[in-house]
Length: 308
Image 1 (cartoon, rainbow, N blue to C red):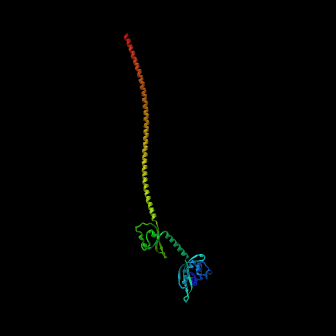
Image 2: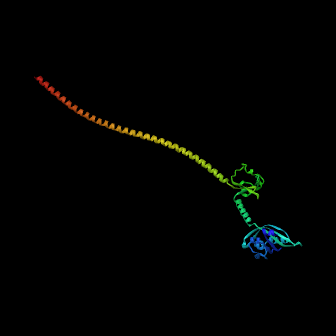
């Protein structure tokens, strides 16, 4: 008993639940001094609602009859602090077979329970938001949550006990983003695998649709680019032709200017020729008059000579 007193939290009760004694380990765990608890009843360490329950009353009746209890128990320490104890309630029986006291041997497992509760809370949160399935080490399905069953379209009884390979068949395409996590036992060896998954089928389909649309757009852009390059080439050719035409027009314009100058020169020469012709005509008339005069004069001279 001395060894247990050093390593465990120990408290003694009467068969009716009155506190007789507690060691230093128990007092340290619960936060009270011995004077604060001695003579009071066990119910001071539990919730008032639980203390009033028939289960709690039956618990002490069974202890008083010599029944043994073991388990993890939530107790309330000083300042309403919650304490978890892994404990055994051990009835001590006298030679006449009567229970004379109850010895409780306990270990403080509060930290372990809080860590376990935190882990369970995280697992519950993951299970609510993700698809979860458990396998043994050879791939046999142990259990799966509702999210997984809904994503895959099965009931639990349809997959439990079957192999993971059943999900590889191409009957229906389902995309999941997942991690396969080995769970280790106390010795560090894996004993099962838990798969946490998120159904990303719709996201993958949308991504594939976007990729198809992007491919179509890229092809259309290539076609438009080719057409633009062709149009640019044709525009360049048209520009060259236009430049050549402009040169031809300039040549024609220059030739037209030269032709106009030639026409003007011809017109001037024609005008001058006309003036000369008119002058010559006038001189011809004068010459004719002179000749006529000379002819008349010659006739007169001939008449005179004939008279002589």
